[in-house]
Length: 194
Image 1 (cartoon, rainbow, N blue to C red):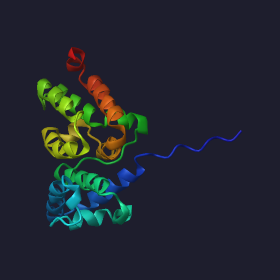
Image 2 (cartoon, helix red, strand yellow; image 1 turned 180 degrees about the horizontal axis):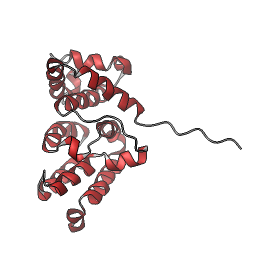
Image 3 (tube, one colour; image 1 turned 135 degrees about the vertical axis):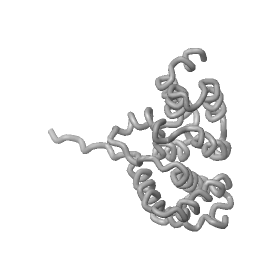
Image 4 (cartoon, one colour; image 1 turned 90 degrees about the vertical axis):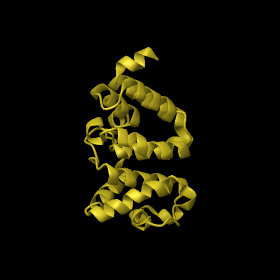
């Protein structure tokens, strides 16, 4: 009996994109231009026409960006801009299910509360607000939330964040539940009170 081939890595494309972003962030001026992409990404209807987004849009060329929906394009630009502001490691040796649990926004907020980077009440309030937002609202709030975290210490995996942003319009409820479950694992005392 032959063995089944291994399942494809759902993060491979996201990791490859973040590797390109990492290479693009080699100079401070390139990072500054990508940081401007954060502002552009909060308004997907104007992503292609915003001044200063040329470098960020260049990163999308390998992703068939011309045919990419503006909302999805905005998710990629936002993630590139967040990476430029807060470089994190890309890729993980963890299998996909573990990355979904350990690298998501809920787990990162839980670890930040546990480590004292964010007060427990603030982390809980942030979780409540984020899990109720539309995709546009989530994109507006995400840069502020990531600024509160130390992405290196919190274990925030931007490939998981990008995957969650792309899935939000279709699976917001399931993603929210996963964030809350991960938050409870990372910081059980606040989650037990809820």
